Length: 119
Image 1 (spheres, rainbow, N blue to C red):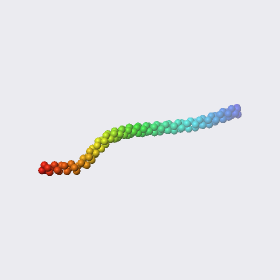
Image 2: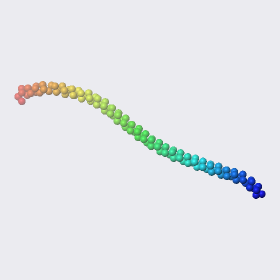
Image 3: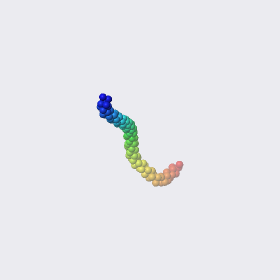
Image 4: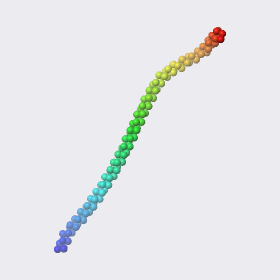
């Protein structure tokens, strides 16, 4: 009876050992996949953090672009306004140059008039 039980038990023992080995292999695969999932979750968190930082940087750049565009618009307006002033200044400068050319003669006339009236 013992020998019969031994013979019947041997294939079951082999199958049990094979199932234990397979279970250990499956457990190892499960651990590896869980580790990979955890690493992937960490990468996702890191990417989300980087994405948020990039969004903040983009918003700052957009704000800076808006300010630069406003400054450019004000500068362009100032240049346009100064363009009309340039025309006025050139006219004034020409008038001063004309007065300067007649200054000697005007002075001579003024002196002669002062002498005439006895001043």
